[in-house]
Length: 137
Image (cartoon, rainbow, N blue to C red; front, side, top):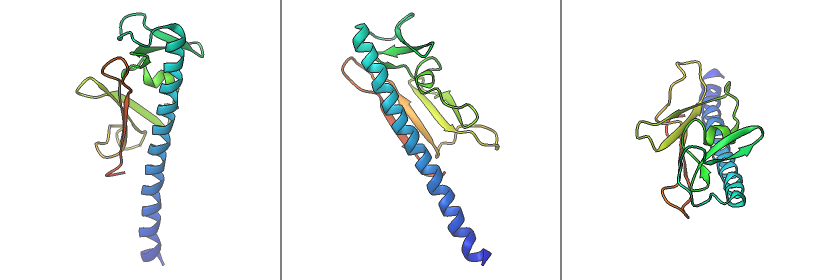
């Protein structure tokens, strides 16, 4: 019984991790759209990231770049307000991305094959890019 149940169980775990990543992507899309709406109201939707450029949300300030959350610790993570017990986030090596990955007990490091990457827009009128990587969840 274990020989047939174990592979099925392991496959369900992988599917659950992938679904969780896709859920986070949806939350990121919603949060970034809401921040953009507040940026339009404040008249900063065409303003590049700079000191003091942001919108207030639930007693916090989300820094913005062309109206959307920035890809750093004061941008998209603040907009999402994720549980730090479930998710970790880190600026990527390139500097233009912020990577979210599930908090695991095996070192809490970014997995190249199991994460969601947020890239801030590059110009006024463009949208952020949000990408799910689930090749090795």
